[in-house]
Length: 52
Image (cartoon, rainbow, N blue to C red; front, top):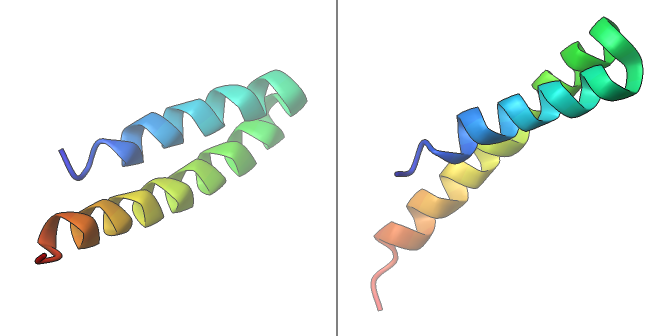
């Protein structure tokens, strides 16, 4: 469950980038999506491990 944001945002960024600027945009979108997915995964893990 914690890894779910990575492929979702990667593919979303790839698709949006490709739609906007072709292959060059797809590479930028995939990179940005990957970074956002990793950040989202880290944030989700922190939220799950936090004790209340």
